[in-house]
Image (cartoon, rainbow, N blue to C red):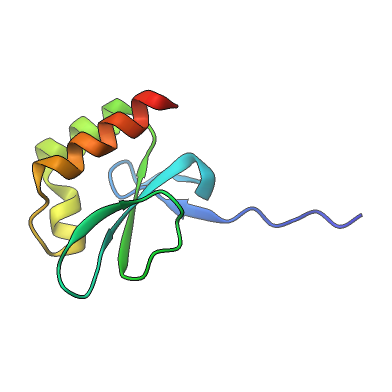
Length: 88
């Protein structure tokens, strides 16, 4: 039986390649709204972050998500990211 290819993505914080299911996707749509994409299929420019509190803290301090998505990230997006990480 043929093995399925596992999609790999790069975390914008740690620059580490991980399977897509181990990362969380943050999306900026055409209007500039930033949301957390739990399905991984939303339209817009996406950035992946590792599913850990340490990566989230580094992203907040260095503002790497803001640079990558080219828009200011509201605090409620970071709060929802933290809730998603704590659930898993």
